[in-house]
Image 1 (cartoon, rainbow, N blue to C red):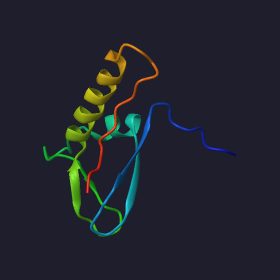
Image 2 (image 1 turned 45 degrees about the vertical axis):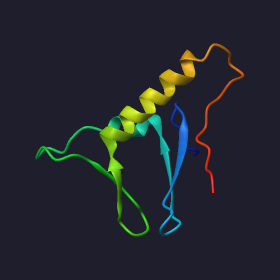
Image 3 (image 1 turned 135 degrees about the vertical axis):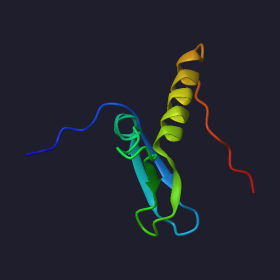
Image 4 (image 1 turned 180 degrees about the vertical axis):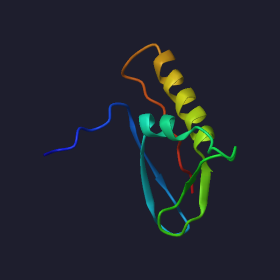
Length: 86
């Protein structure tokens, strides 16, 4: 039986140092952003080498701001992406 896919948007984070790729969904980030019972933050780490990428709460804040920016664009045929320059 197929597992139902999460709603929301999907993003890819690439760890430049080791080449690992992390695929995230806005819904799973939202659920994972709450702190641990001991008060410490939840961390997004590289599945390959264990390096810390960011706190889930910071990632949630970024994704919410990104979604708001896209909604505020006046026309649906405009998008915004970070340009990587050499």
